[in-house]
Length: 359
Image (cartoon, rainbow, N blue to C red):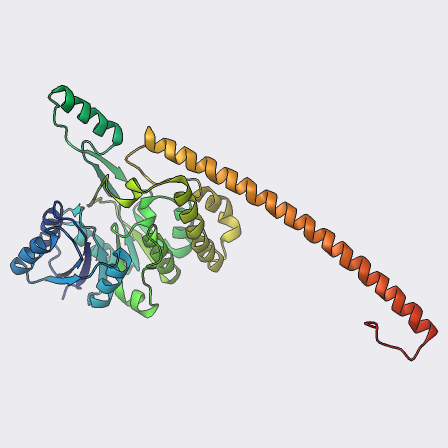
């Protein structure tokens, strides 16, 4: 029996320090029937030469060098080039266990699943947090020798192993609506025919949470969901990433409000919006699994929550004011209509041939 082909889509941008580890892990998969679509998104470092070395060594690699256009456009190009039965996404600074793809495909084939989801491991490099960086600088300035520490690894998974229908999966998603587990791409396996049939693509206008929006579109058309118990994806926290260097309260709130609309649309289509509305509002102040459960990052999140609370109170106040103005206007219109009706009636009683109440 022929094993189905898996298209692994790998966007690359300035990843010279990580891409070799990533490609090594992909090429070592026990599920060997793969095509690896590597898309260099205009990297300014030595990422492209490293990718070219791997292409020479492994014929399963398709390498595309393109002008920089952002991760959404790059992934969309990868989807256009993919030819496998299944689609898998990997980020260039991460890596996967040798049997990760095999576990995903086995679950998909066994259960005829439209989406397979797996736990993942977050790798937190030493010195990734701001306090650690400050401490290292102080030690260097004082000439104090620091002891190298291994990276911290945390495992996350919020869905018990099993098979779920759409409604059950959607309800479980609401347990952790802000979680990476449900929102990201790289711990999942997708059916390419569903992506093609329903023209599911990434929204290039969004710089944050574009993967969550992609998943919500896909869930609308998926029917069978399989969760596996093996965590084979290693998500490496990068202190230089957008979410760590450009995060601020206003951005968090604006992006969450934008994503909220997609959530609302999905659950309205499923006929579940009223049931999950409290959890959806909770999404607006929830945060995903983070490197920084306390300290400076927690301060930013607390500030974001306060910002949203103030914004919500302001919206409620303005809504109440608008409602009051509308009520006043409605009362005025009603009184005016009653007065004009009375005038017309009086005029009509005196001149029965006049039947136009607008005069």
